[in-house]
View (cartoon, one colour):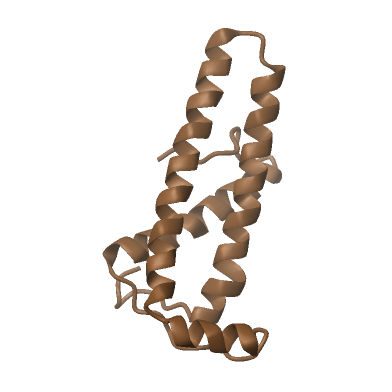
Length: 127
């Protein structure tokens, strides 16, 4: 999602991308925790634990980049929040890392939705 790719408004980032990432994160952690708890094979426990750690690091990376992006639009973010989503705000112009974070957040959410529909065997996407 470089500056010439598909655009996203600040409102969409605040009210769609970030909440969807939050929901996906909760589901993935919950699912992996359940798999770890139910596993009897030490290798399965290790695999799920490593997936949980890797996913946690990926979400942390995404959040750091999204926070940086939002800090560049602080006054617009405040306006959007005060308007309770009525104001769309500007189309964001992310740097390479921020664009990758947005793309990754969307991909994680799409992967989790596919997992919930039974189209993916694992809750956490593999990067």
